[in-house]
Image (cartoon, rainbow, N blue to C red; front, side, top):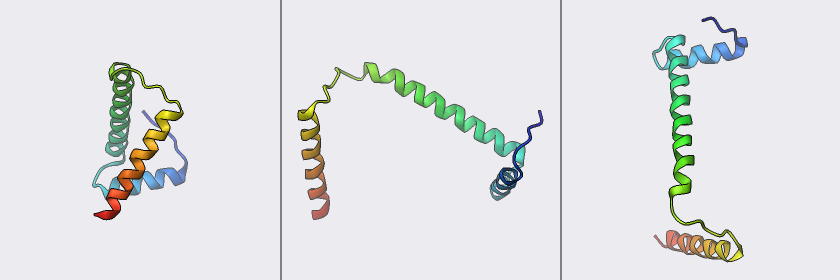
Amino acid sequence: MSITVNPDLESRLRERAAAEGLSGEAYIERLVRAEQRAIQELEALALEGPNSGPPIEGGPEFWEAKHRRIDEWLRNAKRQ
């Protein structure tokens, strides 16, 4: 397969591939495989969400409690 890309992009791809000791083709293959893994991970997380426990109502009380926990965490972090 042959793919034409903008010369600036081609230059950056070649530089990054060379910096990692890879051919341009190997570098692009690695990018595509990384993208495939990322998509699979996102799909798994999306499917995991509905089974992660009971739903949480995100009303004002929820956010106030969340802010209190974050404030407490920040206060403790500053002490250390």
